[in-house]
Length: 166
Image 1 (tube, rainbow, N blue to C red):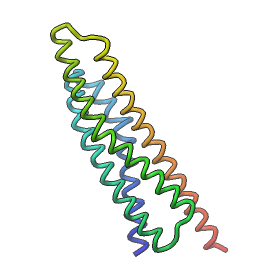
Image 2 (image 1 turned 90 degrees about the vertical axis):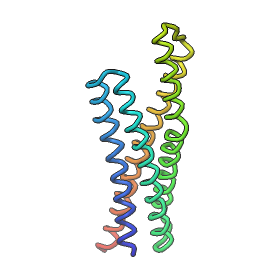
Image 3 (image 1 turned 180 degrees about the vertical axis):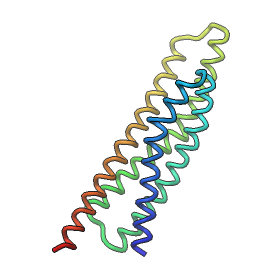
């Protein structure tokens, strides 16, 4: 059972971290450099809605698997750290998916309507920039937390390998 739980935990976190890297560093830049601005924004809204939803799902699966694994074989500092990092990542993904993305879509629509009439004001642009900056910052936070999570797991695995070798 521990083997299956460990696999589920590692698989969910690996897929999530890979998705963060691929979407942030490849998909978004390619879409925005290849398509007209409004089309790219519409495409990426759909991508990010699915991306954050998938992150929430994978994060919750990883948390449950890690919790069950730790309850069966012990809570080490590495497992507590991993739990905290996963909670941070799930919180950032959830807030971005449920709050920031819908606000961004609304403000973006208002901005485009104002641009069409030539009446866009600096407050609307500033609101959009603030929301976009928040989403980028939270995404970087998820990436960094996921990277630290991999490092924590590497330390834990390395420590176990040393213990088993002696």
